[in-house]
Image 1 (tube, rainbow, N blue to C red):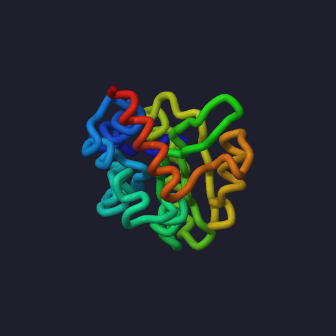
Image 2 (cartoon, rainbow, N blue to C red; image 1 turned 120 degrees about the horizontal axis):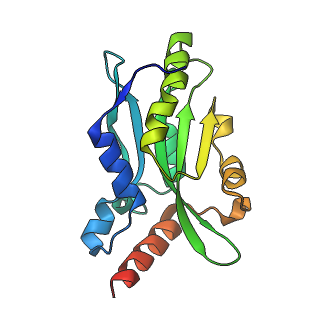
Length: 178
């Protein structure tokens, strides 16, 4: 079922910026987004960036100690949202970062909201080409490291958080520029 909801250009730009990692200066790396939350516009006709609902890479380890926990805390208790989260994890071969797409539809959200977000999901997913990992969460219990590790296909201890994640990301990005 299609809802006819449009996706704002800014949402597409943010996705592209998170997906494509260009050689950047340390200052540019700090401004890169770690997580972003999207919502429907007031008239319910367009998916937009929710103002003030983002985590920058530069905030990790400085003002935010656990970016995933902070991300989960930014989601509303009684309404639906879409989100992108740049997950950092380790496989046997290497350390990786991959984008995860979330549909947040908590139990306490109004039925109408759940229906419109579910029917509009395809509109945003079509714009997010190349997303390998998707998660629908209906409560905080669906958003823990074990669930995320399962979606990524890795062990829970392989999913990074906090200052270590920030340090690894910064060093890898900076080394790519050398």
